[in-house]
Image (cartoon, rainbow, N blue to C red; front, top):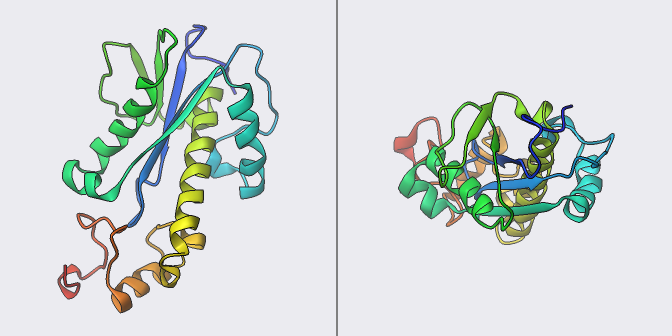
Length: 198
């Protein structure tokens, strides 16, 4: 896994989690790692076990030169759409960085420009660049913790397990119990949407 895209110092990597979920926020993180940062565990968060992500989170937060996480919640997702909400979450993170950022590297193939800072979109960037991988770990662990918290309020959807993704169990719970304030109303919550009274 590479340290940086252009050998810049303060290059910031960003990624999001929860874009395909039916409930909960889309969560982004942004991370700047020093050239001396090393960790053999670090990889794309989707390739890591929950245990490894949990181990990595405090290490990244302690050792990164900069790290931050931001949520965009369902109400706003429904208003501006999930793609724009993902960009907004990333922008919120980068906006909190007080260091001079020469380049933004983004997981995926699309990004909305931010304050005239050059950016590169990298498909599977979370398995290629350490700062994006670190951002993916922070975004995923923070969002998972949020979903586990709201699971206590609505245990029938089993968000502590499915994290809001469209599993068969989650869709069955929507069919049985309806939707909550945490569901994304602009998403196709059931295959036959007309049966759900919004």
